[in-house]
Length: 403
Ligand SMILES: [Mn+2]
Image (cartoon, rainbow, N blue to C red):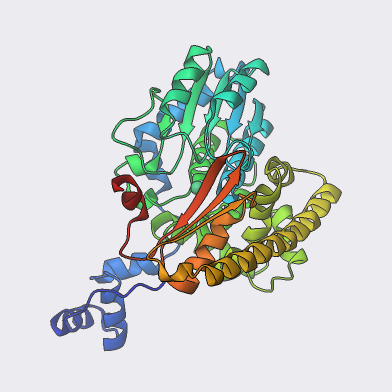
């Protein structure tokens, strides 16, 4: 949980709010410091039911994407969901895959390999999918800046639908089917993660398809993804997480996979903390150390034994990930000490063959320890891959482009 210092609140504002609400001075100050200025704003903040889903009817982009997917011709075509290897990307892929599959679509998924391919659509994978007979590529948690790749998809005679939650550039890729709430004027949905976009699309599809599939089990997974992706807990995110955590902690839980993960990690109460530090790392460890397609397989499995087996495998993977990380961190700290790297304004480490899946975590720990912008590079076949972590007040992205 992140705590930000909020705006100072004037005495006049406090008195005014007190008069309107009859609440204590302290409570009024607290609400005001969070930007809540009226009874109505406070009530809506305290009501954490999931709201505004009817508003989706009025958002053009989600309606376009929904209509496209429900198009009679599309229902006969072979769709591949192109996802991502982290918790958000695998959950977003898994729920959309599971839903469309059960609704009778010819659908498959593809998760790029973190080490070999990296994040997002890539040309080699697009060609592979073409050869395997894919006719429509549907992205989850990526694609909003994949200009060349989208062009290649069209050149190869396939169609593409993009769903993402990353900030779009000034220009958008060349397709009419783009769903990214960063691109909409709907503050309630603005901060959702990639899996959240999948969930909203499923809500919309279900209005038409009426499959009767229990969407609560998807909501549970998206809650994990929302916390894991560290998106802001505002609007839809806050309502979803609060609603689902209340449900789960009063023993109303539908998702078998999540039940197993909770059991094996011996988590007592599900909170943003236990999700972020214990549940999500088991899922992320798979993509860090091997192939995250396994996570989608796990999340969409209907076989109880398989689910149990995967859950314990992921638990072990996470222990292994911690081990690798600890070794790399030890090595990094030794080098920093020996070479007095902490005397520099920016700490840069270049090590051959360090596991690319964990250098981001190591960079984060070094940055925390020394309070310096940190760049950790792993060199493989003369190509360096870097993970950078900065400190408040220094935009490392801009620092890199102006140097
Ligand atoms: Mn994401």
